[in-house]
Length: 211
Image 1 (tube, one colour):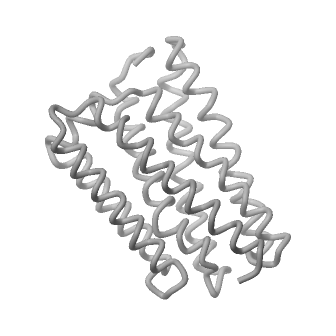
Image 2 (spheres, helix red, strand yellow):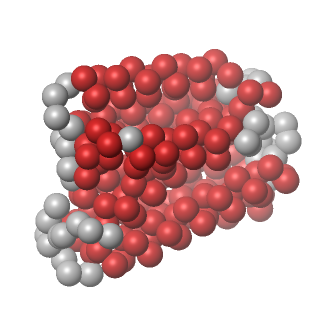
């Protein structure tokens, strides 16, 4: 593994840890007591540890991301205590979590280093950056009670889900073998951010601005 690959893996791992650390208080805001957030925190970091350990192996195959995303959405929106916690979470916080997608721009560096195919790295790296820029604007809009925030968030979240799924499909076709940093992204960040987009869209359907 050369210096660029080490840098990219460290960047994705740092972003993954940041995502877990930021998601926990956003979730905990709407939870009653500390048990559910504590169990969630342990689960997130245990999942991250497994993802780091298996990032360069066949266990980080592309099928992992949709399976984990489906499991997270089922738990978060289908289990009453978890759903209530997300119902009480801050819309500003939920939207702002997608700012972590700025790290997806690192895929463009990976293209320059020959680690990712150009079509995949440039297009979906740029898409992540655009989604993150819109997340900044939407977080501001929710915090200031903008009337357009709700509808725009629904469109943005739907676009994010579609782009993420397309990225997984293209990755499955073009990226072989899967570099370690991309394996970690697919095994942790992709399903986490994708599931959070689904939760955000669900909340935006009923939320009011300044939430």
